[in-house]
Image: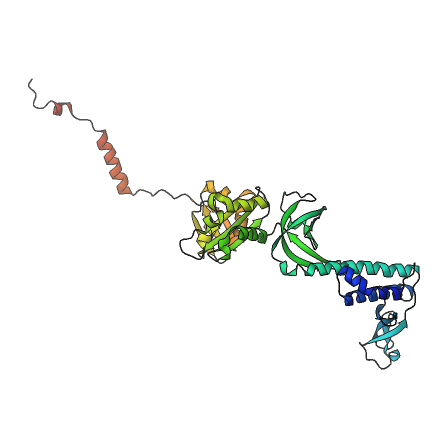
Length: 379
């Protein structure tokens, strides 16, 4: 089946309307397809070829672009041309060689059609993603469209986003058709086209869930000062109040824990959430961050801090596999080291104290005299 250039040009308006894409984009895609087909049939795969369409005549021209190089130097004729043949062009400039484009053979026609199909898909996807650019950094509800070994594809309505394994909550299972909230992280424009990256594992996801549950954040009476998270395991969130008398931790927990429970219902009960008071005093902040461990003393040296705890509190401060101290370090920005506090030494007695104590002990051992007890009695 031949690739009819005139027929394709006549369909530009129809394709643009059907795909909801600008007419200029469709023309550019067709020109790319014709250039690819011409390079396959008439030229060389290394050639840099561009195409121009004349919408009035329905004809196309191909231009082979070559770079001007120094005479006498070995060169690739597909991409380079000696200066002597470049008609006055300087070294480093380019020369375009014009060719009329006729109908293509079967193989080249198939190449053109494949390019058009792929470019239309890419352009359509990119156009859909543009609609979500202003939603980056927000939470949206989608439907699981497909579960693959490395990614989960989420249908968001006008576009499909991908949630890589690194952005999934540890231990969470996804099934096709289920609805769930996702954080729109960014748009990745790679070699294979643009992709909408979604996340449920990032700290920002938990922050947005709390913002939805705690209206006091929007009115400014309480603030989220920091979040550290290991998705599916534990989250630490530091909060503060801007108005005296407000309990920021209680505000985020909510009456009978309804607010924090609403967040846990979304991320799963397996993940524990520690809500702590933020402090501009580094020592106090570190103590809070290591909750629920009880801290004896904190010594700070630059961005490093040594934290002393009783022996029975050491494992609590460190946490399972070092999780508690790791998250506390991330939250506070300090490199934390947990040490066992030494027990206070008993004060050594002086020689005078030892003599007095011995004398006291001896006096307690003296028993009363029998004769003294019978004084005043008649025989």
